[in-house]
Length: 307
Image 1 (cartoon, rainbow, N blue to C red):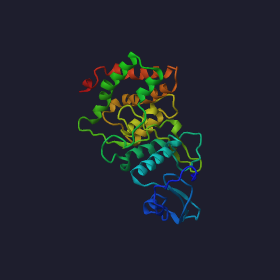
Image 2 (spheres, rainbow, N blue to C red; image 1 turned 90 degrees about the vertical axis):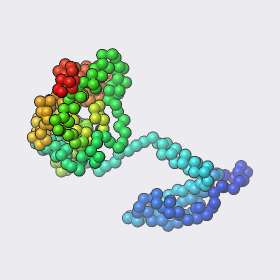
Image 3 (tube, rainbow, N blue to C red; image 1 turned 60 degrees about the vertical axis):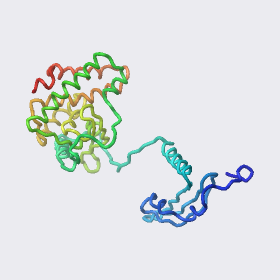
């Protein structure tokens, strides 16, 4: 607390600035806020501080606010610094949604693949710009994450390079040749059995924990059949029969003869991710290596083979 024994200078902020609630302050409060009064509260050497008495008009609960007012360029810097410092202080971020009582079962093959196919076909989920991408920067580069765990080696980096320069063009470029056009659509992007369940109360399938990680097209808006990547992994519970049911509602893209190879390739991301999680355990790295070798053995010339 300031005292005249220690600090006898005037506070460099006009007192009248905390004698009313400015519209700029009001606009930053929740929309249902009902303001009652503002009174000086606390103390500062550099700012005016006040308590704003307020309540929520929807339930009459008291919702008071603390206000600190600075003036001048230096005051602006001080207010900005305090705001950002307090924002970062807890270094915590949260996601909040309605609570759903989930079963420990995966959704039924009888209806789940059809629901996913319809989700992919829904025009509301198409990219508004017609481009691939997502407005939020994605945090994970899956090859880099795997190499950070197990360290890069010459053999692995060579496979990575060949996947990028040969397999990706060979399997994806034909999707946009001979008049075909890809339409980017919203996908869940991590639809393994750990991220899908059944609502106990309604009996309906539920998906959650969307994770936009991708090694090819980069972001959450992608080719819809990339969604099936984990369904090609034999270690997961939703596998072949889910794929077969899905394509009844969302037919294979041309060229259909590449469908299985594309699926196995989409599976690579999950093999790499699994490898990145287990330091010192090279089992999943070897699985990923095998996944990369198969299309490279089949398409050693890359897109030139198709063209």
